[in-house]
Image 1 (tube, one colour):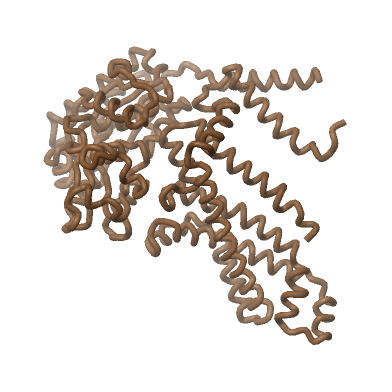
Image 2 (tube, rainbow over the protein chains, first blue to last red):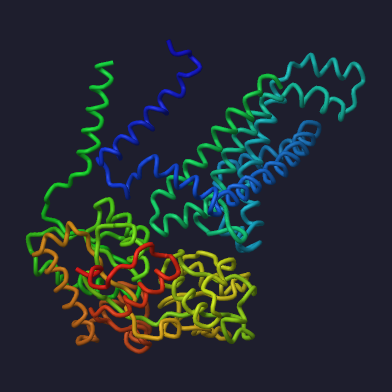
Length: 247
Length: 308
């Protein structure tokens, strides 16, 4: 019998096999659905010979910078919000206003303010990651066992000690959940911003790659870009976030 | 196991079914806004196609840009579309089953700058951003052509390009942000040149050095096989173009309404600033040669093969 661990791969594999079969048997127009093998070859060629690898690094780099700045801001906001109700109320209000707002909707305004390019995209990514991380952090703080906090107080812990030794470690699973949401939100923000407003920097990222492939009617290229984003997603899900329970 | 195989077979047969289109009495034709597409507006408003094919449903499909046109034709949502020669050639090179059926218009195109110190292309090297519509558009190809001709290097501006829709490019140029120049077509070209301080750096004619068609009508292989419909569309286009060239008063009236612009502006744009409406196809060979040389095309097509 197949072990339970493999279940999740069976569905995916079936889709891939049907995909390849339907193109090998010439059931579909390759301009609509190119063969899986062609897509993989295009992807490898793009990574080795083309700019795709640089574009991927460019994209991930921007996202990581956005996540880093977002994390620092979230921690500062979390600290201020937890200990001062004035900040708490205001941050809650702001996140209620901004959290549901898609970053792409802000893009035209951001572009007027800071111009096209890296800064604009970074602001959009920051907007995409900050609110889910902040909301999750708060959620984590709220679900902490009150007795732990009281124990820290009784032992004379300062605000900073309470924050670093009790609040953060106890809220870790919520923080990781927030990071995961932020990560996928950041991808969405980056790719949609690039696809609507063009390249960032000189070679652009994955969103620009998709935009350009579409403009040149390169269906294989479009599929290879999407495949790459998926592969990165699988890698992050299974390699980076795998250990969240240990934390 | 048997069941699984059966299910896969059912799924596959379902997939293959979706490829077939049924024969319906319908023509799906693209409707686009822009001065270069004016004959289509005339054809629609005057009902020239309807007149020729009274029993056929004519569906006007609004499309925003070239990529959408190509994708709509690919997914069988469009029989006849109207695009620039370069994007047509890119699709043709990718073995899209389509060819040119007619020319539609010639138009002045050009690179406009807002910087008075920029007098030639060389002044733009490493100097701000240059906005064009999507890569592979006629504006982008003309810019690379001009760069090749004047500076000997077609990709010299690649790192400075930003892809913007015409109205966004116009805004960016006016607001004087990083965008120093914008390669565009009418009416945006005319609007930009009418603003004090803006001037033309390079025109489409400078780049091509010959007369060329801006927008061509293209149709799918499937539609071409349906000769009565195909001929009717072609004739309706010719009729619309003749109407525009002969009945100026009424043309202006119709377009004023469709474009929601001032009458005097429409008259000026359509008749006085270099727009030409004709079904001849010019410049195809030059585009083919240049785009093949610069590797935008992987194969070198013959002009006659690209036209029905």
